[in-house]
Length: 129
Image 1 (spheres, one colour):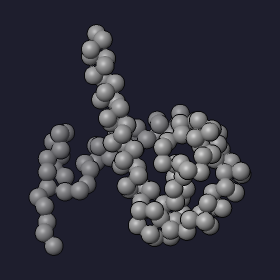
Image 2 (spheres, one colour; image 1 turned 180 degrees about the vertical axis):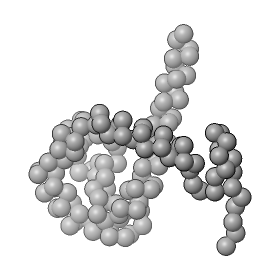
Image 3 (cartoon, rainbow, N blue to C red; image 1 turned 30 degrees about the vertical axis):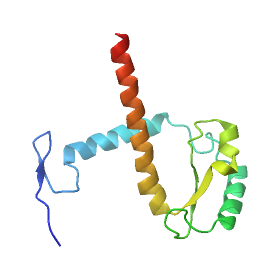
């Protein structure tokens, strides 16, 4: 198995390939804690008893992950609903995913989408000033 050389982080720490330096790990944890402190609970975001029933029924009808055919455990909103109740309950906007696909693939797609949106927002701000 080939090994890749460690790299030097912007803060000066030498870090093994595929890992984060300790100062960035702390910063990431702090950023996540700040985000979680302001985020409404799952119940407040609409994931209530009705959702639990609908989720179970959807997973019974769609037992395998749409990406890798592993057993599905998560009902994912294809287009993020962002509080829109019509989009939240639209079954055509749901897909069955396994934990691995939801945690890795789907979340990285959403992060890329957020980065693209943020960069276009910053370019608009630069034009306006």
